[in-house]
Image (cartoon, rainbow, N blue to C red; front, side, top):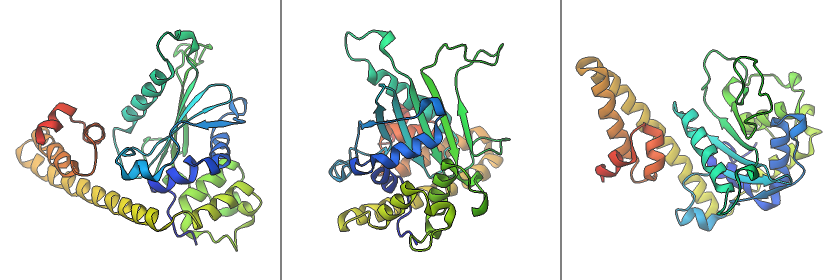
Length: 288
């Protein structure tokens, strides 16, 4: 069984954001992207580095990369439920677009930018498909008309994936199964649907030997932080609903947003707390 949960963002970052595993990231992205967008080579823009994390420089454990044609990619694994994740994703897409342009460059030099969001919670309501892709289209024609083609956003909702092993047919099926059920997988007894895929086998082997002692401590701490954060958010939300019914839903929600923000000050930066709670950075800064 895999001893490390690849859905924990710290583990996901090392697994797919390390130089020695770039082939795994390429395989994952090619399973997600359309045939015409397949990747041959990637350059990691923020590769995994334990020292950066320990120094507090990796509070958001996304992966940034560019391919052989200059296109940019932002890949993020999100475990904790975030009802504002759509806005967060657009924000990170916009940041990645602006990072492309150095002083003196022309707008025509902007390359297509993909945001790949892998979510361990259900986010898109009234849609059963676990993989959904968004582009800018002409609502009259339903087509992109080859305009505004620098935008593409993907959501992969792990909890909507419920295929049994005998229905696993595509590379994306195999990657989502790996991320969803790593705890069930034994590299010595893999189901045939996975055993023939060399990149999946490598990913399982990499997870099994992933961390040294220092990294394992960081991983376990990160897991505890995520669990604590989820517990605080759930508790605060439940309390907010109860108080909201008694004193007014809007006022109760605002108080609980502030309480959640207060509880997260010691573990997250102001920008991330703002994204999590819906408060402004200025409101959160006052809590200090």
